[in-house]
Length: 144
Image (tube, rainbow, N blue to C red):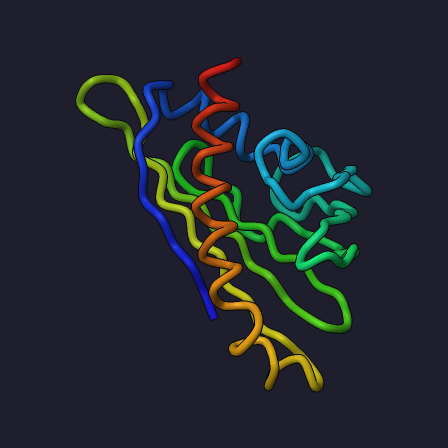
């Protein structure tokens, strides 16, 4: 299951990459994130993070790793726990007016009994959260 959105912000691509490529900033722009802390690495490829998020009234802990880090064009983070694997991908393209086009995609794989229930329960909520995430990224970048 996945969601994706493409949207444009007025900030330059390097600035956008540097901000969104630091996964600890999810506390500011990801509506579901409660806390994120770096557990190892320098912030680039292979860096790991502990993330606690709230989704559908539940608190969920995931261990994330930066699996792609190509400044300033692409970043991917993969989060795992026993129930799910989430991969967040963002690509950044400069626009003619000096802004940035962001393509955001979140892929979810559910494990165990949840893999059969998730499509029925989670899909609509994931679409709503994707819309909230875009709005939050835009407003957070504007406020910086």
